[in-house]
Length: 132
Ligand SMILES: [Cu+2]
Figure 1 (cartoon, protein in one colour):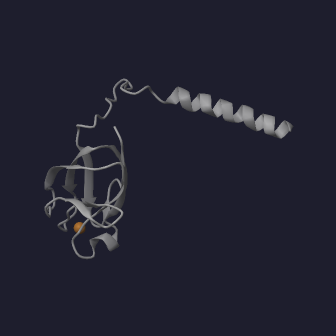
Figure 2: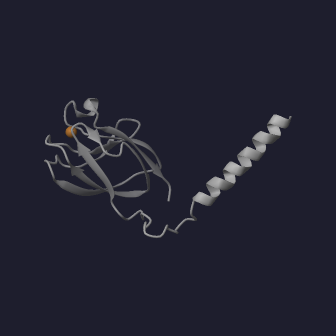
Figure 3: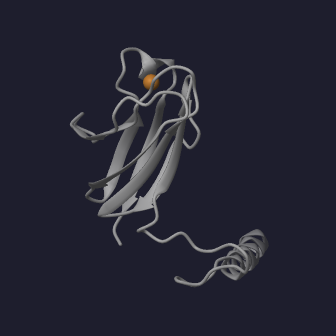
């Protein structure tokens, strides 16, 4: 029973610590402006990876700014769990960017490059869209 009590105290302390670290919605830390939903989500694609393979964004409208940092042409596409592609950039050459917006229902999606073989080489990530 004593162990359970110690665990409870620990969890309470942890909760207080986590609470102290998070800022209320709409507030930002000094010098670090909060990212609003209307600002593009930056994605950098390269040979053969995405710089941020685990994105969480607020929907329904999401704007991405996709940049290709690799010598091989790439695009960034988004598909849902059923495999339906909901958004694709054009094929971008080294240094090219495209800003693109699409609507997403809350849920989990896959980001990938649709050029042959690129997804299996590593240009793949997860996108989680949360309700506003
Ligand atoms: Cu690619």
